[in-house]
Length: 425
Image (tube, rainbow, N blue to C red; front, side, top):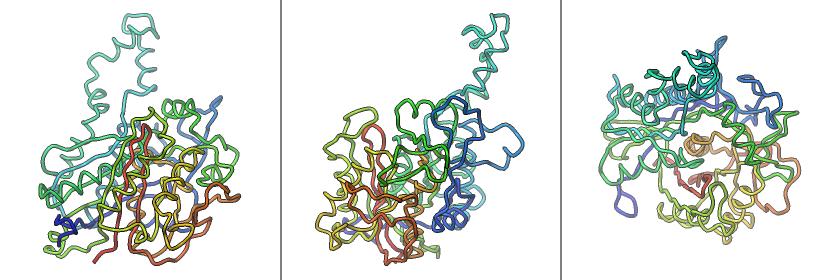
């Protein structure tokens, strides 16, 4: 029940998913293996005069026929749905009594424009639309303040599921979901917890976030056919597609899981992280942090690169990210038995980039890949990029023998986390 470093082996006993492909593990995974795209035209807000008008959207049941929820409420709701599925699947934590801490990866949230505009119109004795009017109208709005308080989402989820200790809410850009899992793994390995509820959630498909990413020239503007817009590793890629969703994993020590007769869905064998502090959005061109995170995760798992059977790519579809990930793959797997290295594919070609949720969503998909021995494809791969000599599992899912998966998460600002996931013993 111990790994090569004498630490408790960490098992996964529950998985929950919410993605643009559907609610729940079964629907999302079936859509992914079928190569179905969840990208569509944005219907949540007006997009006239915007460069990008597409995204991966999740319409929650309570939004049907009503105004959409704002990001803080959306993050909390999707996180709760994913966690409910994961906890139920694990058979742990009945009656809101989860026997471990909560680690919640989520985006920075704030008061959004619908609220600001409504406040500005109220006036409250000041000139309507003025900053003074905005402040006057917002004064005393305690519920709104608490909904946008970064740690508040985690506190409410912790109360809902009865987790132990103070909940940890964190954000490490696009590596956030993987960071939440890493923290849970390390808490169990240190003997501080027998179990952990790890969540990555994202709900930022809203005007301000879309415009900010667009100003960075990071988003695809292939609006004519949304399903064809996300093209990781393909020659004509022009940026990522914003998306949203959530994933939750129930982690336990293998000893604890076996003692209570739980079904083990897979193992978290290792984690590696490395930051480069090079730029607020770009990675260092030398690839040192990306390569370092991949190597650190493989070493932490007690493995050699040749023992990795498949890589779940970060694979955003931006020209720079895909080039850097390819550079990292060639550096880490240069001596792999296959000249192209292990197969690598990007689910972002189908669900878009779920940002803060991505690392957790992709860890879940990695475990399902091992369970079903089937590699999800990279769709929209029409013209291979000669600068990317990788087996990207183009367009169609593939059967394969998979025992160990490396899942990559590379975030803005050079925040990189990689996880190694393995088959259940």
